[in-house]
Image (cartoon, rainbow, N blue to C red):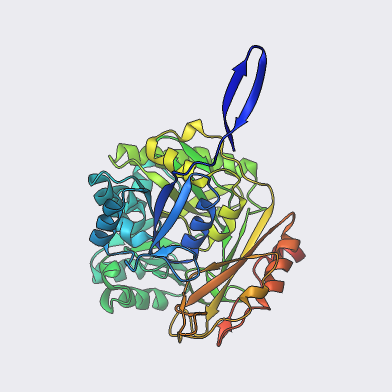
Length: 443
């Protein structure tokens, strides 16, 4: 490492110094594949020392704290008690909605992520839609209801198909696309009366159905400045051909070839910057990662949803393309100096495919031993629903168990590397989509 310069007359020479012994420890809140991807990229920074997880998982190679992601007070106390933890990264939606960043900052703890007020863009779909309406950000037409009868009366006359959305957080599953009027009325009952998604269904958004293709655009922002990440495309349906139930995501690729520079420039102008300005005007400047779920039809780009954090599994394909120091970027977002950085991305292609437990996203068994991980070559594995078994090996502990990801010069090579390595990994009732990125290769 060379970080000092000595001058002797006109001669300029570098002097090698020892590696810094003092590094910053980091606490990452969350324990899924997204968090594993964040941790892996943070570990590439020369400034990062120990990485703690709250809770982390057995495959992430972090110091597991045993603290759950929504145990807000325990997280704050842990970070406060470890003086060398110089940053706490709050990755999941629930702790953001619960105000974890606010509580960390109030204790003088450096935290990456939006405040509860800014994260309302995600934890209240009704609020997000109202922000878009107030500030002229393109989105689908909609109405919001807290009364079941009023919601049904509107659904009885609105355009079909329509979309019923639970207002609050619902693990990515609170969006119901209704092809018939009967389905729309049943969906309102499911969300508001039966409380399938709990308190998230106290209000619903009934939204016009948009046609086109979906694109995920993640951005870094310090509340004033913004830096775009490569676009990506998630696959929400459980089965090949976009069939089956909605899930948290079964795979993703980046970047999206159909979403070229002209569309990106248009989105930056009409969607991204207006949203940043809107949140400032709302008195809730957004600092962290702001995710734009977009529907694209020709040159028409509309916002389907906001997320107040990295997406999953988009992150597992996007972050491996980053060439700059993620820890430095997080710090600049906190400090309001994002415009001072030159954030670099490779122009390679990335694909990841999720391996899930049979029955996901409904019921599935846990505790199945995972084999073949040592045979993976030419791809990365990001762990999500895993824990350590009695024999010390990894066993399944969730619906989405892990994902296999690869980067290559083209999508064909990346896809081949992913599926070749998936064949090496086995656990009981494993299933995965076999068509992630297929259209990129065969058209």
